[in-house]
Image 1 (cartoon, rainbow, N blue to C red):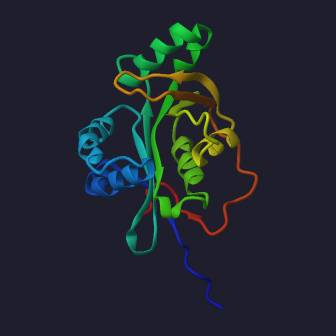
Image 2: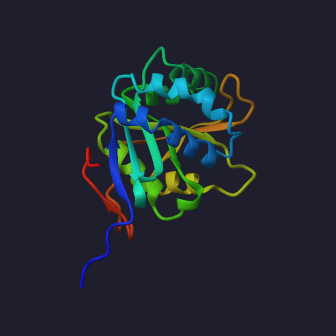
Length: 206
């Protein structure tokens, strides 16, 4: 009996591949976040700028027919970067004892899965693959606060993988929404069980 082919492939996306598939990746971002379509145009140059930063790497899930189902990227964080300075401002005001989090960290900048592909472990696969290639001591990310709403899939994933509060109810400049900054040491703990139905290929596979 012939085994069924894998439904998904986890691949590392180089800079050239990201540029080639940027419209598709931004469509995932807009759909997953529930943003207006015009948001993609505003983010395009920012994503390309991020791809030139030290330590940048990106991974994605490829489905049947070559469709991109999920995208994640990040890079080495440090002084002078907008996110670093915004979080440092918040920590100085609210939690100065936690400023050590901003040393030797990998910034998980974006992680998104198409809404029709969520719930099957793809987000965890992206997060694990992305951070496995980072040589930093810790990983940090920011995500919209869920309170008073129930935690989202993203929140449940971060908590399950051991992310703790670094800064809560933070307002980034230019955004009225409250955000949480979460972090944890690297590497991540090994998964308790593999995610069914997903075949992860080595980095660089296509």
